[in-house]
Length: 276
View 1 (cartoon, helix red, strand yellow):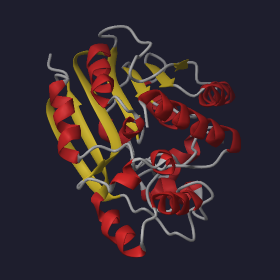
View 2 (cartoon, rainbow, N blue to C red):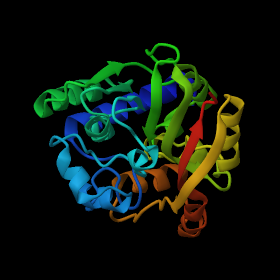
View 3 (cartoon, rainbow, N blue to C red):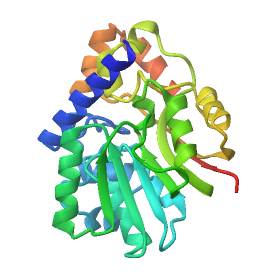
């Protein structure tokens, strides 16, 4: 698919998620229509019950593949940027840590998600959080204005990841930090799966090889790039996840192929810094 076609497909899919309040991307059996609850998805990928109960209802859509806030080492007074902020879940968690003297900015390219996040911020009384409509490849954020960047299972959806990392480097202050959870591949996907529209929405087809992903961070100028954790990103149960069924049917995967491909898809937690 062409870059703009990919963006439109992702925008359309996540707009539907915002309207319907259900997950479409995440670890385990967390895709659209899954029998797994959003609460259980959150626990699987590293959020505590306390964290999930802190945010306004509707902010947690079960879309992540990790907990980048836990890795970030946030401090009071910092300015935080969330790439692909969705309904605001990670932004609201970060806002409690940075406090009233801090600031959290969420950027998302889906109008429905931005509207939902703003509504959640108003419901929760988050005066130190704002949400901006924009693409993570062209961030509506000033140069060297952010202390820390978060992102949760979003960069894999971008067809221009080097631009995402270059933009992240641009907006970070010297000494600033990047903390992301994302989906990567240990082995290339079969061509049919790599071109699957359903697999893009399922956070699989857009994923890069792990080595390439880390190399892109280095090429953007980041230092101290470290993988802080790695977990399986299981394709799921054909009978439980409709989007997984769509991926398998669209790519015409056999059960043996599903079993072979599954372990090659992993969720990683990555931290990196912009040298001071």
